[in-house]
Image 1 (tube, rainbow, N blue to C red):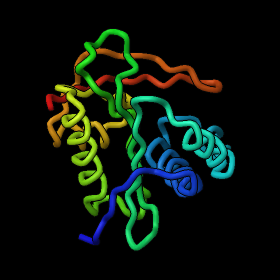
Image 2 (image 1 turned 120 degrees about the vertical axis):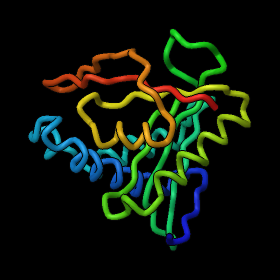
Image 3 (image 1 turned 90 degrees about the vertical axis):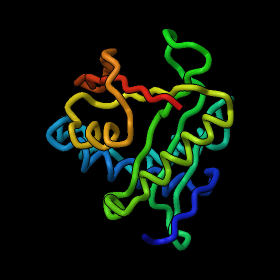
Image 4 (image 1 turned 135 degrees about the vertical axis):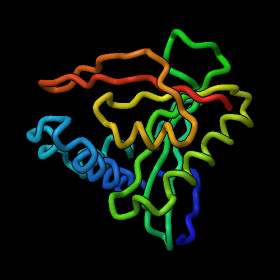
Length: 172
C-alpha cells in the first residue's frame, strides 16, 4: 500500500475535502439519490462550507485528512455523539470519505482505525454511525470491520427527497 499520512484537517484542506466529498457522493449515491441533486453538487460551494467549519471547529469534534505525497485522498470526522438517546461514553463517526480513485487501497481502513483509537483514548467505550440504508456496499464494508446494525433508523430530509438511514454501533 502507498504510504498514507493521517493528520488534523486545516483550513487549507477545504477544497480537497470538498472534492472528495462531492466525488464520493456522486459515485456512491448514484441510483440512490436523485441525479439532479448529485449533478448540482458544487465542489466550490462545498469548499466554502468546509472552510467555515474548519475556521470555527465545533467543540468535541475532530476532522482528520488522509494524504499521500501531499495529495488529500480522504477525510474522516466525528467525536462527541449528536444523538440524544445514547450515553455520554458513546462517540460518533460522523463521516468518512475516500476519493474514488483511492478506494480499495486501505485508506478507509487506516482512517477508521485511527479514528476509533482516538475515540478510545478520549474515553469512549462505543461508537455509532449513520449510513444510507440502500448503500449496501458501504454497509457491508462497515460490517466487515465489526460494526453492527443497531435497529435504529431515521429520515433526513433533503432538497426534494429524503435519506433513510440506519444506525450502526461498535464496541471500542
